[in-house]
Length: 325
Image (cartoon, rainbow, N blue to C red; front, side, top):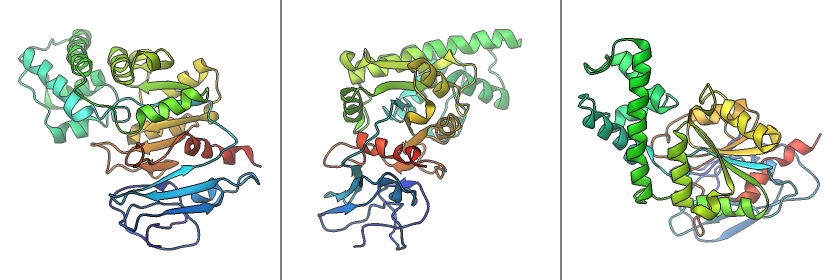
């Protein structure tokens, strides 16, 4: 079957534009057109992640196609659930960056008559800097501060904070109007986790109010009251520093090694791995070309049936090999 691209090294990857090849161990999944059928493989989940053996109980791995030719994968059984499922916000819950945060930054700059506009490509580069206040500061330090900006360092911090506050207000208005939808599969995976007693949290460099608005208005108040939020300046160092994920693990009362993170960016992946957590990447509009070689799995999205890419059982399968000597 030409549907599976085989490689000896992790991570497991599902995309819409990969080619196929052959080798001895399943570790990489490509989406190429093939006839609609389901292939049921009896093998350990971790064998697909690069050959590591797990418990004698076999986990069945199901690869499936759909009418668009995408290939997905889910584990149909697993003995160990994550203690916590941790989501990044921007790019993971919602693809907010290009048409949400970038627009809100530009509207703020226009209101303040700063003569600054961040186009799509420039903003993509700025996203390599974690945090909106940090992003603006780095940009102005590089290109020069606007004439209306104060001159002293302390006054500039206050100036940046005021810009960021207004930007957050504008962004929250977009979210409250539900102009930006959840990414496919997010609500499904959250419901699976909450239904199994897995703790769920959102860990983001974005402002806490903005993240809370995304969770409340797009995931709904019933889910929101069960989801912990760690965001903004709750930690002194932002991603790629692991502080936000370590704080989440500590306050949730779970071991970092029992957590699975869903991220979309290289800096988020670096933060999760530095915290000692498993990390699945779901690529977003700005991050498709980043290096995710250290991820435990890479997909284009979480996905809803019939285009589901992975589920809670798949997240659990990433933890199985930790429980085997």
